[in-house]
Amino acid sequence: MYMSLDIKLPIINVKSLRELGLKVKINHYRKYCRYENGRIHIDLLPNSVADVQYALPRGGSVDAIIIDNNGVEYFGKSKCSDVDAYNKKIGVQLALTDAIRKLLISRTVK
Image (tube, rainbow, N blue to C red; front, side, top):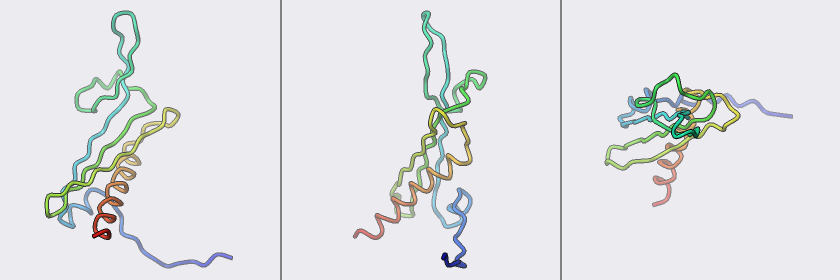
């Protein structure tokens, strides 16, 4: 038998963290295919520099950096497996969760 808990957890996203006064940086990376010297190369590149038409539909990663009021940076990362479709929203959520976990651990271990 399971007990229902009526707990409302805050939604963790870039907007809510910024409203708390934290700085948040997000970097998205996709796998791209390029052909060079007769060989196919697969690279992980930031979305901002690569041509979208060469982006592979699977794999990728997201880096999240949360900077607290003291200027301390907490780094979080999420990685999409090569069998999963790339989903930017899920990647951001997982990377933020990883960074927040590190922030909370640093606050409790003092």
